[in-house]
Image (cartoon, rainbow, N blue to C red):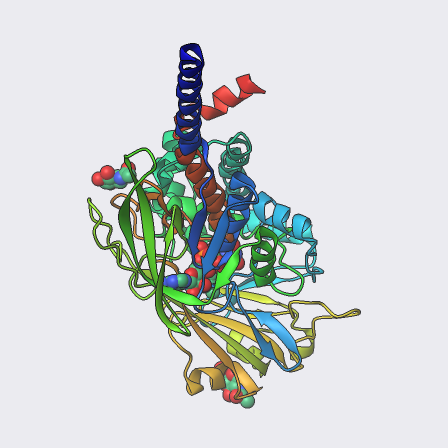
Amino acid sequence: MSIKTLSLRTLLFLGLCQTCRRSLASELRDQPKKIAVVGAGIGGSATAYFLRKEFGAAVKIDVFEPETVGGRLATVKIGEQEYETGGSVIHPLNLHMKHFIDNLGINQRESVPSKMAIFDGKELTFEESDWFIVNMLRMLWRYGFNFLRMQMWVEGVLDKFMRIYQYQQFGYSFSTVEKLLHAMGGDGFLMLANQTLEEAMLREGFSQVFLNDIVAPITRVNYGQSVRINGFVGAVSLAGADSGLWSVDGGNRLVCSGLLYHSKAELIPARVTSISVKVRPSKLGTTTNFYEVNYVGESGPAHSLYDIVIVATPLHQGKSDISFPGFSPPIPSHYPGRYHQTVSTLVYGQLNVSYLGAHQTPAHFTVSEVLTTDSEGCALHSLSSVDPVSIPPGYQRPPASQPKVWKIFSPQPLSEEQLAAIFLSWDPAASETRWLAYPAYRPPHRRTPPFVLHERLYYLNAVEWAASAMEMSAIAARNAALLAHHHWHGLAGKVDQEDLHVRIRGEL
Ligand SMILES: Cc1cc2nc3c(=O)[nH]c(=O)nc-3n(C[C@H](O)[C@H](O)[C@H](O)COP(=O)(O)OP(=O)(O)OC[C@H]3O[C@@H](n4cnc5c(N)ncnc54)[C@H](O)[C@@H]3O)c2cc1C
Ligand SMILES: *[C@@H]1O[C@H](CO)[C@@H](O)[C@H](O)[C@H]1NC(C)=O
Ligand SMILES: *[C@@H]1O[C@H](CO)[C@@H](O)[C@H](O)[C@H]1NC(C)=O
């Protein structure tokens, strides 16, 4: 009898210990139950996709988006066809974007050959020929080896940039933009990001004339700004003048809806108004933090609790208005610095080629991309003949003698007078989108916002202060999913490691 009681007691004791051990272990190893993503642009939808990969099938992922999925990737319909109004081109070495379309079974849009020219407000100062060798000779004649050296310089930056894919493949993540840049390109990248493109290129021995004539038009078309943007985004911008650029068949925003679908996330059509931290007792008598996300949807205000939250919209004036009550140190609704306005106007019309001072007859004017120099008379940043998001079979871009769709980027909305100067005739139903498009880059800068706002609260768009591009948001999305995973499971060895490019070679 007494032995029986003893053994029963022992059994009970052992059993209890078993359960307490299991609950202790599971408390640490449990997967999160609910994760929120704020915003369904390419950043937010890629985050949902990568979170699913990191945390498996069981976690519930909610994505909040009050407007259209895609954010700054958007199309408008003109006539029977759709055209990109926001982010449009993707570099051939943007591996995440490439991976997304491959995985989602989406195609690249058929490419249509294009020809570039540069306009100084009075005339075309440069016009690309159909012949590569002619272009090269013209560049050599005017700018010596500046042009070839620029391609080599950009390639050098790109080589280091590409390291990020290997780091992410191995699961490494970074808690700040500076650490991410440093892991890719060391102190050189930090310096590049903290000086103007002009300073960086003059230091490398490029001529001021080359900067004004060739580099400025490229930064103007890509970022609506001068060569005083930071050197890192400048290099990204120059890479955006490489050949082999592509876009997505049917519209770039299809990548966002595809990623959301693939991630099995729930899309909640609501605007997040505040995120606060709630402390709750846990099973073990300690406490756990939850995040309370407050939002306003069609059926009014509501809130939900999450283990992890990822903010994938810029925390800047005019971009979002989310408050973070109760955090210490405080999290601001708006970080310092502002977003730059670029107005994207799509016009169906017939160009007045004399406006560009072109010598050819309209029927022979086949330039599709007109960039502009940073000169007084240039109210436009660029003027391009654009093709629909899906290229119909047998499509040929019409010459300037026929009415077609033109896209104009400008800092201010275009007036009737301006349109009348550019076009002989145009359809008054033009589409105008006033984007707060990308940061107004003004290096040197104070610290960029962090990727980690609080223990398990992350912020993607800090990355835009290095450079704003679809691929940058995708890189930040992968990074945030990895950070969230490593913090949750206490894997400190995968966060902010130094000298990765040397170490990974050892691990291979
Ligand atoms: C005119 C233009 C041309 C460009 N050209 C290129 C290009 O050729 N190539 C390239 O790579 N990049 C280009 N870019 C940049 C690129 O579009 C952006 O870097 C990228 O799309 C940013 O994606 P994101 O998801 O980080 O942000 P966003 O696309 O801005 O997504 C944020 C989302 O969050 C939502 N949101 C905001 N507030 C809240 C809230 N409170 N609650 C819930 N949701 C909220 C917004 O509605 C939005 O949908 C261009 C941008 C513009 C504007
Ligand atoms: C076309 O542009 C030229 C140069 O700006 C201008 O002189 C001419 O009047 C324009 N033609 C029409 C028909 O508007
Ligand atoms: C950028 O440069 C300025 C001065 O030129 C310096 O004060 C600042 O600390 C630098 N920032 C970073 C992040 O290196």
